[in-house]
Length: 235
Image (tube, rainbow, N blue to C red; front, side):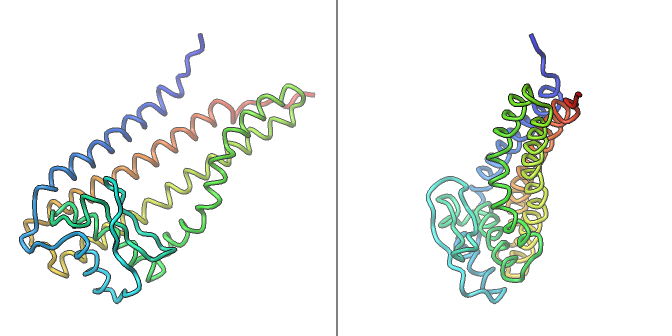
């Protein structure tokens, strides 16, 4: 029986990290969902305050169903806030809402990493879909000629695009959280002792992106170890 040590040593720890990060962000959000703003500002109102403070008047704030489905849609210029964020006055909800408003500010000022991420999304989507089919096709066809093995390398390169996307995403998310914290403090949306809930929620959310990057890196290293060094070129 073949024992895939690359999966156990590389991928499995990254997956465990990702599962922990996901559980951590949910538990942190739940914890600070019961810490409410003394000023009774909702997530939607907080996002609008951040937008107005930055001179943004063409971005709307809307409700969307789901749990932590919050996101900024730059194409339609809409911040969509989930059930537990839109009407909630909790410090966790305000942190999330202001984070999404931070993305809107990034878009407004032309934040370079955000522009780069938006530009590579179509390429990374195509690459992620082609990666495994190309690798499998290269492995099968290599039996008929070593030159077909080049498809494996192309497939690995396509998979590598997902890692590129994750790496670009990190500064975008961290910067949005930084803008959120700064906006909350400057606008007085939360008082000092309430900031802990917002900051910890944003920190937990940021760790999910770090974990996703770790998973992509581990999977790419596994593919390189399994197939990247395989020399099929024989006369």
